[in-house]
Image (tube, rainbow, N blue to C red):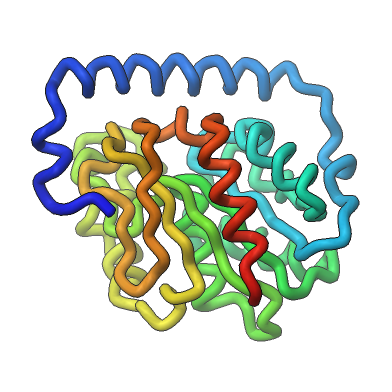
Length: 233
C-alpha cells in the first residue's frame, strides 16, 4: 500500500518516463480498439462466475481487451456493456445501463471488473441499483474513489466530475457500507489520480507497475485480478 508522501519521493525523471509510457500505451490501445473486429459475444462462454467489464472515460470495451482475454481464458464468461460506447455519460446514467445489462442478461453473482471512472460507475450500481443483489463484488483498477485534483482544470464536464469537490464523488466517498466487497488495484504512481486509489475498508493492492493506463496491460495485473476472481464469495 502506498503511504502518504511516497509518490512525492519519486524522482521527476521517473514520473516523466512513466507519463510517456502511459500515453504511448493508451494511444496504441485506442487505435487497436478502433480497428478490432472481435465480437463481444465470443467471450460469454465459461463455467465460473460471470464478469462484467466497465471501462474508463473515453474508453470503449476493447480498451480492456488484455484483461478480457485473460479473464475469459481462466473460465469466466465475460460481458461488456456495449451501449456505454466511449463512456461519456454521467456516472448515474452509465450505472443504470450496467444494471440494465445485468438484468437483461440474467446475470447473478456477477463480479464487476472496472477501470478508472468504471470504478465509480460500479460502486454507484452496487449502492443504488442492485435491489436483486446481482452484483457479488467489484475489482477496480486505478479508480478515482476520492476524485482527482486535476479535474478542476479540465474544460470538459465529463472530466470535471472527477473533482474531489464534486457532490456525487463526496457522497460515494461517504458511503462505505459496500467497500468490503471492493478490491482496489493501483500502482506506485498514477499521473491522473495524485490522490491515489486507496479505498477505506476495501482490499487495497499496490502493483509494481506505474501509470493509469499501462497497468491494464501488465501481466501481473491480470494475474492478481484472476486470483481475486477466484476467491470465495
